[in-house]
Image (tube, rainbow, N blue to C red; front, side, top):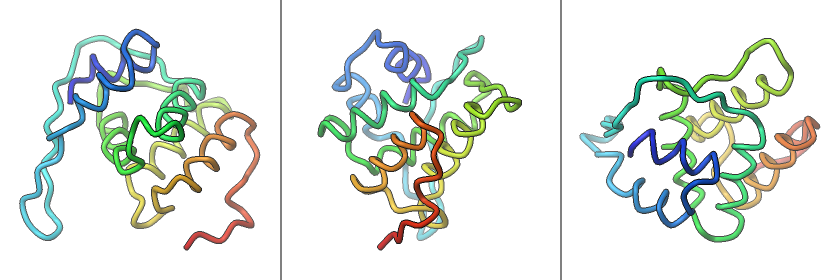
Length: 136
């Protein structure tokens, strides 16, 4: 995965197809619980806001991206020195919380169309939509 491709997708400069093609082969399984992420990083910064992550959710909900790719996207953005969000705002808290949820679905929420709808709603409205929702 190339951070430039993800940045360009978030900014609306490339299509879902381009992002999906770039995600293929990003994660290499090394053992039962070991994985290597192949990520080409960039210099500079890109400020991530909720509308960027809503765009990712919309790509999943329209069938352009498999929900499983959210794990790779979340990990990439958290591990990156390039993607940033301001931790001092409620919007940035939603960005950080959502990326951590995506990066660790095994301890947070499974990556399904149902949860992607909920992630999208939380990002767009700020409502705690997971509070009384049972995930199966």
